[in-house]
Length: 371
Image 1 (tube, rainbow, N blue to C red):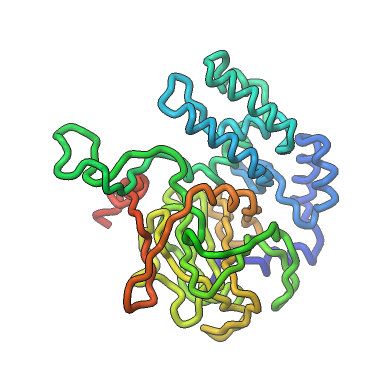
Image 2 (cartoon, one colour):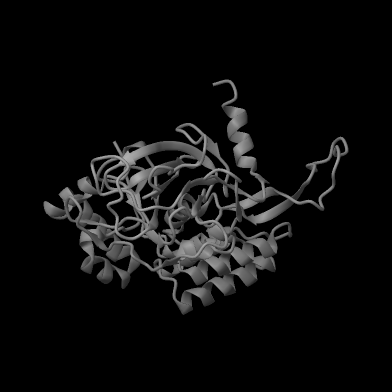
């Protein structure tokens, strides 16, 4: 069974909002103040941040592109300094102060806090000690973007060659970097267009909401792994066509790539259980799907559908409690870090041009080497 269970969500909506969901909305109106009015108006698709049964059940990921950029810049700027700023914590602090809103006033709030934090005038613990819902936002945002920034090694022809000196952390032919280690989902240089279509209606098979982000382009455009992880789903689904599901190593994120190319959808050798590194070519854009029969092009517009599911509890992996977030701002943000691909002569394959070493991959493989 495919991970995307829109049908089950629809059935819940057709039956009316569950009592549990209503309680969540009421809770959000109290916690988030004015934003509660908006959430109530959109209760049929509310994605409200709340914690129930000791785990987060709904997340309203409303972080803007501008907020992502600003928080990320502060993280990179202060990395290695005496007063480092964690971008997830900075975003969570801002959300806790503004009720999840990220307009101009929120950006000013973020900037003031970052200036004080970087100068050592205050700590994040001091800033957030009176913010009752900071912990909610921190856990939610860490689940959504926590694996995208960190240290990694990037291939560089000008990096030191030969065997590194004993006791050093150098890697032959690589330079150490800190920043975005997550990648844009399309190879660099390929044309595309997109817009914010999260929640738009879909009608194939039954009425349902669009729980991902569409990027229109050309057949065969290389699709890149946004984050390192393990392939946990591969094959045909009548809604998504040829698709790939990749789970992050911490199990909090499930990346879904759908409508891949007819006849040659996947990168060579990719299979369930494969470990991929962020920026690897994993498949190719197409327009398969909307058919119970495999390998059919029933999608009118060539595009990549990619989605991100957040998982806080095993019960959320499949069923009515799945959490999918709006990826339009995040897609724009990931455009800061693209990976070029080169055609493998005589084949339909493309390969990334610059290799990286992700410590998360090494840690995962070390822990599973004997399994």
